[in-house]
Length: 98
Length: 392
Image (cartoon, rainbow over all chains, first blue to last red; front, side, top):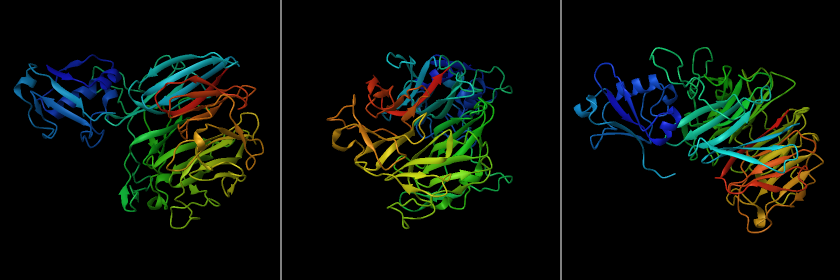
């Protein structure tokens, strides 16, 4: 079970609480977590990464275990603490005011 | 007429203002989509309970919302929770992909950037949603970078009408200060094949075959800031309006100049007349008097506020050239707000109600065709758009 923390505006959009729990098939990676998230909550498609290129939106970041994973490859394995559900995978809106 | 529903898009959400036909007492609902920019929301005339919303964010991009109960509840079409990854919905209501398929034969070309270099088209947001007058599930979207999309399934999926973006003049289009946006969509109520659009800064275009092919309609426009002031394209058109019973007559607020066409855009003539400044954004036509036109003069392209700090709507009852200042109820000193291009609308009650919103967060109503004004609300976020539904 993977724990994913969403930014406030995406929680509102998906009508969920702060954290969602997902079953991810195969190795847990950024890509597979986002695949599972978007499959369950189609309204989030296009809001975190591009529909087609899968490129992360510029003002969205991925953190876990006090590390910035935003620039890790989408298919890179995530820390063990994330894959076991001990630590959440954080999807964060960049701190850019507005 | 039982009343009106005013749909207000702002920098930080949408608001719905409702009143009876007297338009004196108002109920305010919102903010809906709080924290998101709502560039535009508009109701269907085929089904007034159907409302489409463009919800955007610099962080999370474009979302399309719709209501089927007059704004009480909202949904992202096709975006509900699904338990099966293989199952519907597909969640494509915010997927705006330029159509470069072999069928359209329109490659993703380039347009001019501010510095004159060429840049490829890149989708950024939906500026304007125009529901079909005949079918509540058909709606058009004008987007940045400039293109026209259509949905025929209630906003679940969108297809580009690529003949516009792929017009040969595309490499000469360039962004205005707000971006290279398609902001005006006018559907001819008497001719389902005829569509007018306007783009900053490319100009006005018309299709007579339901959006398949397009031609520029800018003859008579004259603009500084482009190499040839009389060029076929490159003009910063801010807004076009028409009266539904006289769709060949168009009124335009250009970057500078208020213009009129009597031949479906084939030619234009200036009707700025005695306006104190002919720069502005908003323009609209009285619901029952096709030659009564409203504009809000703004001082200049860098001073985006009313001349002299006096907020004045100007009305022409002669189809342009002769304008009168409407001031009763509007601030006449120390007012430095702007009125953006999609932030003026009229209702269909008699006498006609006129509405506009400001970047200072006020929405004003005149229930007497502009003679007197009062604020419905004073302290909203900056208003981006105002639309009105006249309810049966």
